[in-house]
Image (tube, one colour):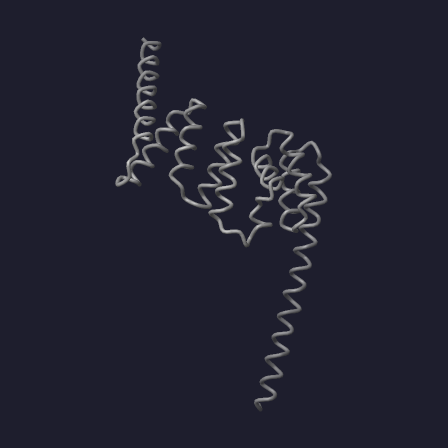
Length: 196
C-alpha cells in the first residue's frame, strides 16, 4: 500500500469515527432534552426543578437556569437556593470560567456573610472554602455550626483549623474550641443526670 493510500485510509477511518461520535452526541442531546422535558413538566417536584436548572446552566441559558433554581428554592431545596443566589449575583462557575477561583470564593464568602439563614451560610462558606482554602472561611463555618447548636461539627472544624495551622496565632479559634468543648461536656453531664 502506498503512502497516499495509507493516508486516505487514515482519513476515512478518522471521518468514520467522527461521524460515529456525532451520532452519540446527538443521542446524548436527545436524552438530555427528554430529561429536561420531563423535569419541566413536574413543577411540584423540587428535585426536578433543580435538575432542570442544572441542565439549563450547562446549556449556558442563565435566564432559564435562574427560573428553575428559583422554583426549586421556593420548595426549600438547599442546593437550588445556593445556585439561585450564585446566578443572581453572577457568581456561577459555569458562566465565570475566566475569573480566578479566589475572587469567586471571596465574593461567595461575602454573600454568605450577608445571608441570614444559617444552613445556607454554611453551604455558601463551604463552597467558597472548596474554591479557595481560607482560615477565615473555615472559622466562619465552625461558628455557624456553633450557632445552630451542632457543637460536634463546630468542634471538628475548630480542631482542624488549629491542627493545620499550628505556626499561626489562632487565639480566637482556640477560645471558640474551648467554649464548644465546655458546652459539649455540660450537655453530656445533663444527659447523664436525665438518665439517672
